[in-house]
Length: 343
Ligand code: NAD
Image (cartoon, rainbow, N blue to C red; front, side, top):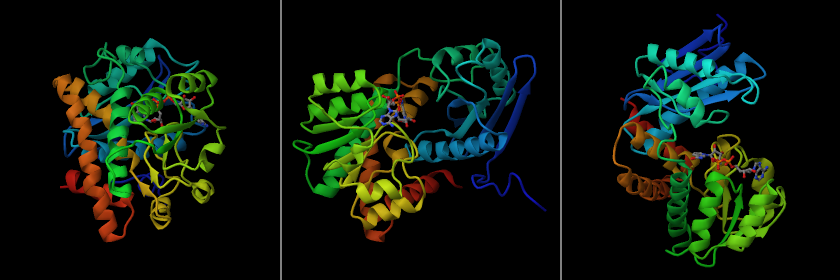
């Protein structure tokens, strides 16, 4: 029997995958609930002009699985899920589209809770919220990115302590790629801790701000991989750790907020062989989902920071285990997540 779904590269025993079509609004979406052992699945709704439906299926399967791992390793009482809407976020958005998504979430009865993601905004989520309560991150208490940046910073501190055997960032050079919501805040913290910043972005305004406010040195978008830095901090795109960049990388630590930094799984091992300590992206960048989860569960915002700071304890568990077992930190982090969510 030929298989289109169950042998799909990213199919990983997902509990439930729902295809949603609503002709009046034009909604074509997919909701993937990967695992709910720890609680209802939570993860954002991505809107993207996918070139094919197969690519959309692939994406939602991969992303929902990733959320299970991220949420579990962050110690949150939620499972992993994700949804995608097939369409152009610049031209195809209407309130009705997101209301139809809200109706679909309501039919799932709380097994999946959505939030904003690439291509969607808090305003879109407000339209979802007219039909269902199973939506988080409505922006009522602000942008979660500063918490993501805090997680990156405490994670980088843990990496520095483990790899360089020192408590201070003072005098270290950080090559930081992407000065957006996460990257700029992370850069500000690094600067305040005494690190020297070398930065790249495609946005000239962000670069000028980093130069003026943080004394950052600016390099071209491709030159960031060649910087003689102690830490490489990817905070823009995914898959920036690939065979091409690996041979150029001079940093001894990778600690950044971008999702899916390893182009392929074997890169984790290649980094280890090269003597580079990789702080796994989904461990490091969980600050945002921690904040959104607290908001949804109506837990006190005053407790969010302490929870985000636990990211450094998690890494302090992962790094020595990876050393001892001679395995990549990414594999050890996956295993830690599985030990928490698998029954
Ligand atoms: P953002 O869009 O605010 O910032 C991205 C920045 O990267 C922008 O300044 C952009 O100009 C820059 N950029 C784009 N292409 C670039 C290139 N080729 N080279 C250098 N810079 C480039 O996004 P964000 O919210 O800061 O998120 C950054 C990364 O972190 C993404 O991978 C995102 O998925 C991930 N992430 C974000 C959060 C969060 O709380 N925002 C949480 C978890 C993970």
